[in-house]
Amino acid sequence: MLDGPTRGWNTWNNYQCDISEDLILEQARAMKALSLHHLYPYIVIDDCWMAPARSSSGELQADPIRFPNGMKSVAEKVHAEGLLIGLYTSIGQTTCEGLPASFGHYELDAATISGWGFDFLKVDTCGLTFDQTINPAPYYEQMGKALASQDRDIVYNVCNWGIWGPWKFARTFAASWRTTMDIFPTFWRVIQIVDFSEGLAPYSTLHHYNDLDMLEIGVDGTLFNWAWTPKISPLSFDESKAHLTLWAMMNSPIILGLDLVNLNIDSDIVSLLSNEKLLNLSSDPLQQPARRQLVKTTGNLFAPAYHFTGFLQMLPHICLSSDCTYVEIWTKQLEDDALAVMVFNRGSSGPRELKFSLNDDLHYGPCSNLDIEDLWGDGFKYNEAEKIITTQMIPPQGSTVFTLTPADASRCYYDGLNHIDANNFKLPSGAIFLLLVIWIISVNSIK
Ligand code: GLA
Image (cartoon, rainbow, N blue to C red; front, side):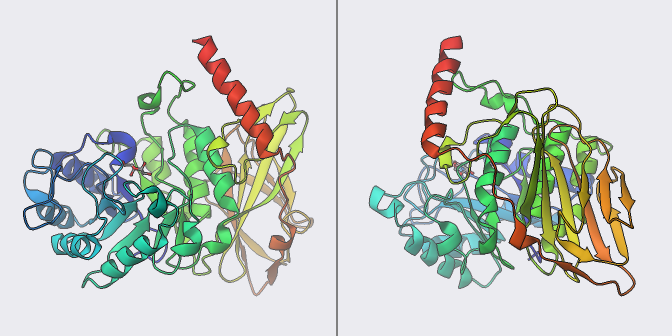
């Protein structure tokens, strides 16, 4: 088990049900060929692996066309590549794609999956009755016990979409729990998930993490261009960089979804995904997830707060003037009084540099001597006398990250948690709902 949240790859975001043994093996081999396997060791098969009916003795069985050699064989082949393997089921009668799932069979399915040699299990929420849906905790707990009683380590990922407080009920028995409904490949959605999940940071502890969903870096967004949604293009490089950085800073599992086979080892995306120092932020022994320390804004900005408005989180930040700035600073406490700092140009009208004071903005000091490491190599200036860092120009949706480490017996203390900025631009959920309705009507009338 990783000493931190799970990292790996999952079929769903890019392939949905279009999966097979060949696909899994090709992706596992590509992970290795790209030298990403030690960073992302779990290969996870999501929905649609199972046959439409259980076997005559009651076990789940592999879809005979997609996985003709059975699931044990896939697990063995993935293990032979030096990777770990994960599988999917649902806590209800059926999966979200209507296939057999685990309700009433938790012990049997845990034993079957363990017998096949799987190392990770994602358990969705589909297929419960209404009464069961509003109180899923006992079912998830039973599955947790069934998995814990197997004689192999199986990482238990609860996929309860954040709707019935899995951060409360699952934190004693699950390795991670989804905080929201599904992600999709657009940056707005990535940010909505971040906003919703930030306040859940206190529930995240060693071996028990808020899961912000699988990553959309490199996923073909055009798959999601349904008639009723605005047109989606894949995440840009800067958006991908912010996506990965936020997931690492917030101690979320990092489960990729892109096609690894067609990636060039020299591509920008591979070098982005290979940033081991960034990924290791989430296995820092202190296990503190990042918090939004402060928001710096200037000019004319429309930026509604999205906290806890669930599905209604559909509004972008809009700069209403050409000088508008909306930059956030996120901080993550690390062991030995070190601090990771992310500067995120969230919605400005153009590239921005940001100047921030370690004492006044971060509440981090006195630090007579500090090692500053620039994890993306973007560049910065440090005024040691005034303890002020100035970033390079950061493009909109761009980000940069530093770690600050006390050097030579210098002492640094962080008091930032007591100074976390509340979002300045709160709109009541009713207003957000009204704007959402207006937006849906206008999108539909433009067609
Ligand atoms: C739900 C989950 C997704 C994926 C699909 C599969 O929507 O939230 O992550 O597993 O089911 O059907």
